[in-house]
Picture (tube, protein in one colour):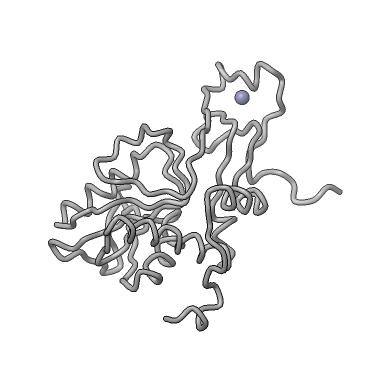
Length: 209
Ligand SMILES: [Zn+2]
């Protein structure tokens, strides 16, 4: 595909600073005091779907990740984007790398699995695509599933890395933006102690009456 034929081809290089600015503009990266779905409190809330809904933002982000992979000499045979967070960025990354993009999802027993007739041929080289890697646990779970099918996991590529370097991954992690985020148990949350009002993301009224 030539650049001229792709309406979303990046016109300027995307660096971490620009991505952070775009994430904030889309309310995909919020700083404050949040109650996460896990029940923990955090000073940071990330909702990449709000960013990835815009193809003109998602495409340059995927291009930047593809560039990192290519610079490292990594060319996968297939991109796997775990549902839900990895589906959109995984598709776009696969499109730009010119390879198929598939996804894992939880089965009836709650186990990550390839469904819908998706399969891995033993020896296939895989890049896992995520919107954000928070603890690394779910990415490792996906890697285990893929390796059990015979895949060679080359790397994970994510928009955001908020592991603080503690992801425990045994393969490279490429990310466009590394975000420091603190999480607290509600009873020991310093933001609560300081009286900062708590926001449950997604529950805010869309508009004031
Ligand atoms: Zn709190």
